[in-house]
Image (cartoon, rainbow, N blue to C red; front, side, top):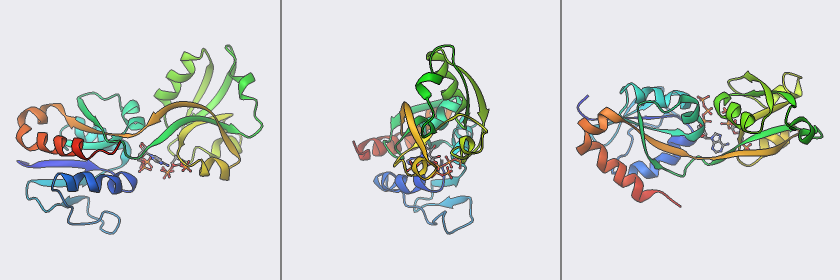
Length: 214
Ligand SMILES: Nc1ncnc2c1ncn2[C@@H]1O[C@H](COP(=O)(O)OP(=O)(O)OP(=O)(O)O)[C@@H](O)[C@H]1O
Ligand SMILES: O=P(O)(O)OC[C@H]1O[C@H](OP(=O)(O)OP(=O)(O)O)[C@H](O)[C@@H]1O
């Protein structure tokens, strides 16, 4: 592909990226929520979008199947960031990575150094680092979604998950007991593509940078 390919996931990242794309003069020709197409054209013949799972965005960019992508910090931590240049925090899809437990669970007692708990999460790397820094022993159980269910059915004592409004925790009688980090989405660029296609990629980076909201 002589032009550039941008990897995006459907949903909040696609929606929140539209104004940034517009600032770069890029307008998609299809809506991924309505179309089943995975390759979407734009008003520019030299720019196309590929629609991927949020977790897969760094992988497409790492291998050069996409030149650029937009991925949450949560996803980038789990991926490791190999081969990716991360020039911009786009300040979109903002939330927090938290430890949450059923209301009434004595997390303070469980989290004393030497304590041991079972934690279910999709974010194993971030969780491992967090609990290791606290000197806690945790048995991590990898899940791929609906983490909030795990403590309700005895799979785990706690979860590490993303929290935005807190509505999902509340609906499941859970509470956040620790903030691990603030999360937002970043622009990621394939390092080789940046060198070879700089005349196409740099203007997109610059336009995104100018359109980031504080
Ligand atoms: N409730 C939320 N509010 C704001 N941002 C969020 C929220 N949940 C997730 N995010 C951010 O948006 C990114 C994309 O989330 P999205 O829900 O589209 O994908 P996902 O369901 O987490 O991933 P996958 O489809 O691969 O399972 C996440 O990686 C995270 O950075
Ligand atoms: O604090 P809240 O505003 O309730 O948001 C938190 C929820 O948002 C995310 O899920 P998402 O909506 O992405 O659904 P998913 O399970 O399909 O990823 C996250 O995994 C929480 O479940």
